[in-house]
Length: 334
Image (cartoon, rainbow, N blue to C red; front, side):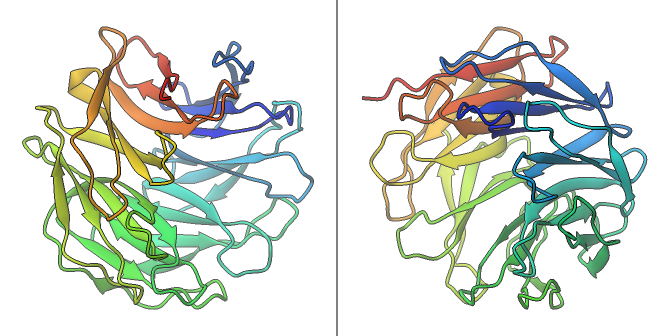
């Protein structure tokens, strides 16, 4: 899991990546030409699984929130503004937390945290107090074994909602937010595939939040697009072939060719490649252009940002192979 932001306030994007086996987070400060400095590591809990970024204590510098699946905790590390972070503050989560998102759920201008708890079969919401601390989690029941979540306004009421998926079961549900920090009961959605990764964006230009998903099926080498209806539901899933034999893993969204239409990039673990799907603007996508990365790599986590300050989105990819590397793909689109 990798995330992109400016951690030392120099106007250049930096990277933060979790190291599950080492129980640390690595921060690599950007130089501005597409390269990064050596990693600095910060201790978190046991087997970190996901990371979120935001200013949790309202002091300007960005902070980190990391969930740790092996000891059922969340670590909050407050940023100093120089690219370093203070020692972790530890919070209890549900059982086996797998995903975390930082958003202002209750509209008070302070970032809150939404956590997916796999074995507890719920999502937990921790409201931000504004000084770097959070409330204990309030939980909302989901189906069994949720694995990831997207947070967006899916029903057009100005309040953030939750879209929950599972890579274990062919299940997806939506929990509509009230705007006060709480959510209604889940509504199951009529889709029947196991999901691996999820991201949101307006893929057809209608102003409504849509969803892109990858599938947790070895023989399914396509991505799925669910167009939002604006009432908390989605249309029939449209599948777009990857043209590849490998299974897609994590997905990210951005405009890679500068046509003001959202595109999608996917990590293909077994192919040592990433695929860029260019959007047409009507909710459909063309076959991907595949980009190989270093031999022996197994791309997994993926994030986008302009790493060399040329106005074009680039791609950062982490690998879950034994070489413990990260790859940067600079955009050459004209």
